[in-house]
Amino acid sequence: MKKLISYEQTLHIIDSIESTIQATQKLYISDTLGRVLAKDIVAQENSPAFETSGMDGYAIKHEDLQLGKLKIADFNPAGTVIESEVTTTTCIKTFTGSLMPQGSDTLIPIENVTVEGEYIIINETVPKGFAVRAVGENYKENETLITKGTTIDFAHIGVMASLNIVQVEVFQKPRLAVASTGSEILDVGEVQTNDSQIRSSNHLTVEALAKKHGCEVNQMGIVKDDKESITNLLKTALQSSDIVVTTGGVSVGDYDFVKDVIIEDLRCEILFQGANIKPGKPILFARKDNKFIIGLPGFAYSSTVTCILYVLPLIFKLKNSNESLQIVEAIIDESFPMKFDKTTFSACNVHYLDGEYHIDFEGKRKGTSAILTNMLGNPGLLMQDVGSQSLNKGDRVKVILL
Image (cartoon, rainbow, N blue to C red):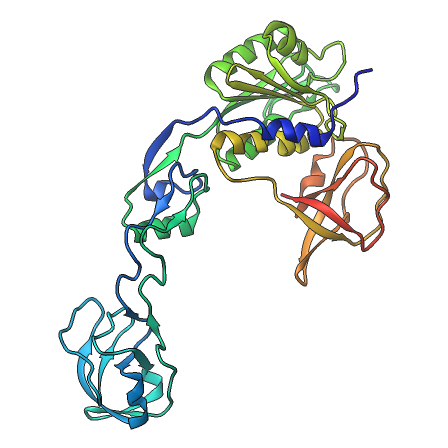
């Protein structure tokens, strides 16, 4: 029997893949949410370019605080440039965002003074430089603010807007095609005609995961278990997609044709076939020229877990993004046995308490790899390496956050 490749070896194979997508497009800044940045964003100037006020108050010379009383020489609203300067014994009323007047080095808040006619009485002093935003406090000229490969979020859009960037260059989205195989499975909305038929969720779960992580998805539905249908599916999908994902048909049954078509008919390069993991042992990962085919198991939980473990990292690669699966250390709040000499991924509940992640298994059902409801709630995947011992309450474990 062929020895199964380890989980660590499968990760090494995926890590070695270089993105086949380098095409970019320019989008209006507000349309870039969730897209991957194709070029570094570099500041062209200091921000702020001049010392500015951080609150409403009075611009002063710090040494004049000891005088206790200063004359108001002028007003300095935001958006204006005044010619007046702060001199000894004077102050200028200055508002949030205003340029600090020449001659001043400190802003005393309006709450710290009492106004008496043309004068302020200082009731409470402040340190030198108080409430003065220094030149370059936000960012400095030629500073790289956002790096290539960043998945753009709200803060990135805000920073780019402050730089007066109207259009942003981003990588093209990966294109993913997905289908479920099996003569016994029905698509959503199809009428069941006999008791042996089951409803497929796999193709829609994979579609949702792919869309959530930035793919354009071609949903190809259900394909019957015969070589001609599967061959036509894969050939069609490869023409228009960067990644083709199938569920079912990769095991060793008489009607498991997906692996045969990938290996024998399409003559793909097999990056790995089978992995020493649970669930998902029959996983098939192949390459055809600059396209990829991933054959996932048919059981719903197995299909979902292997999609997370293998399809998502490939999507991150092809997106040219800096993303990765989020693996954290957590405390297990109940005992949990290790039953398999494989790298095992078990659905758990994740909670964040007192600065640490905790996991438990309340409500998680035991049984086969078909129980997709175990992914409901606030789920994570407990990772147990080959050779791991049974876990005791309070042990520290590795968990993939979902």
